[in-house]
Image (tube, rainbow over all chains, first blue to last red; front, side):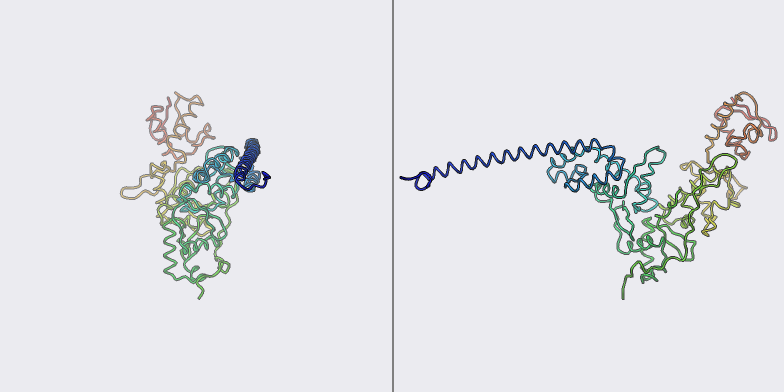
Length: 263
Length: 213
């Protein structure tokens, strides 16, 4: 007597069909219940994160230490605290994901970095004629903390890390705002022109020594006179350095030290 | 041959800029004013060289304008003479730097443009000679006129006659911002009020008087 379980012969086909059908249905049920559980967990998490950022919006705005911790937490979870501010990135990662995080984190974080980015752009623009578009991050931080002239209480307490994050969010503007390291100091470049290696070297020397002359470049780096003069002329033409003609030999100074020491 | 050397082997400059002057309390208008607080850019050596790059120069001229305006306001200087400027305004002795006379003139010319105030007005010299003195308007003529008129109003002297002397150095104006103002400048200020129909000047030099309406 053929047993149904043996699965041979014509009846085997219908058995296989029935069981694979049953397996399929069971798998479907599992997937559905997993998806439901996940969706439920996610919405609980969303609500918690949203509430957290709302409750602490004031702290995020005003307290740099708290803000740094919040950013570190976001990075640990794998969330970009500025998600949603970079529209291109949000669209690429599937628009919904980007805006969901932005909704959860609340507008406070985005608003803060957006406003900071605006201030950074303002400071760069205001000082451009003085420094040719290269400004030390420490000076940006000092000016932003001091606040806009003639406005009471307009200063934002920010750290250099905050400024770096704000600049990253400016990337969609065409990559004009970039950070650059010169001789150990971090600078923000706000003009499209890229420095060539010679120009960068001279600016680094000026960063370290305060000023530079043709002889100093010759003596310390072995540069020929013509090469040095050509680079100096470039830097002057880009208003990146100031000229002191009253020294024994013409000196080329970085404007970075101009406003140091109060005033 | 190594084309590069590490930055750590660079020799330090022989010249060290002197530290900026210590921060002073903000200048007051009381008779015993503390020392003028020079902004930090006055210890920046290139500040005393007229910059070749025009963008940089424009910024430099603005900084000079701010310095001269606030210096004259602090010291209550109404006039600058190119032949004898204040020793510490256009030069920084410890640094060994000074703005050349031709460049001083360029700065004052910049301040004399209407677009920049004007914060300075050249005083006409003898025929054929360029001016070498100028008024410094740390308050504009209009602001001076407002101040004088407001004082006349507040002290209930509209309608009475005051002598120019009283207005300049009388006891009643001992606390006024315009006391001891150069007489020629005060007359210019009064001229503004006359044009506004708020005052009338009559009499001759020594005994000239003003009536305010």
